[in-house]
Image 1: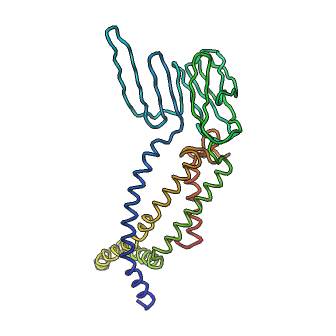
Image 2: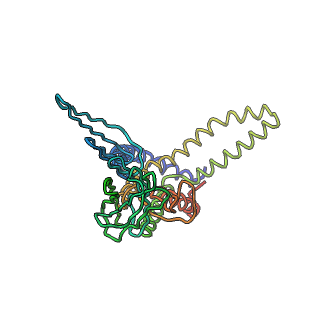
Image 3: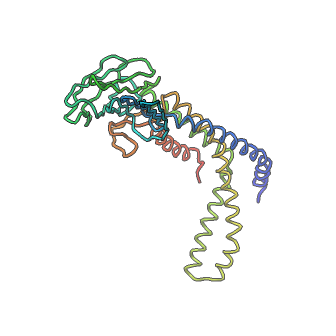
Length: 334
């Protein structure tokens, strides 16, 4: 071991205690952030639904909780019951048996929104309003449904905020809350992309600071050489050599685990900032399922049938792409 390597190990040993305290502190912050973030995530919606029947009211919040309250009067008294259950429904609303859903419950001006509905009057005109302003008329089929993407509307050019989209045949009038975020495509596309680049760059810089990359590369080369030597001895059935290699294996594996621990420290340090930035970005853009990009390529699971990409998928795609690129440029891989 030369003087430079000894000096490097001394420096690493001195900051070891400080890093241990940092990791413990980070873990505590992670738990606190998760405690705040999980309820918020549970309340994020892709749509809202409601239905009304005689003597009954149903309110459904997509992917969260359905609360059903039913009241009925009797000849001798009154009885009231309430039950709560989880719901995994799509973004839909119902009224007197009629149900309606939107392809998206948030988006920017000019975006096409497809309406799907059922339970309306058969072969009847369906009127669509956006905050009490008429934006289109469709016709229900012989089953009282709107299907196949035949009924749609373009989001009006209005300011960001929450608006009510109502669908009515004159008897049934379910409504859904539609949100227009402050930033829409393509500005949101650029914002998410730049955010992913920034976070990837921070992660790579922390890696260079925390991880002993030279030791990691040296250990990887030693493990590769050891595995090759062991494989050759096994094929040659050289028992004496295998015994020698077996004695070297445990210490080498322990050293390998010690070197690899530094990567876990990087995760502990960067996890909280990445989580908070993503959470704040999603809140600013209008939710975790808000559309932030369009794609002409029909990528399964990533791109919707209408060619749109939600925040989560575009962020993951951008993060993976630029993280891989920065790893190569900054030589933080092994």
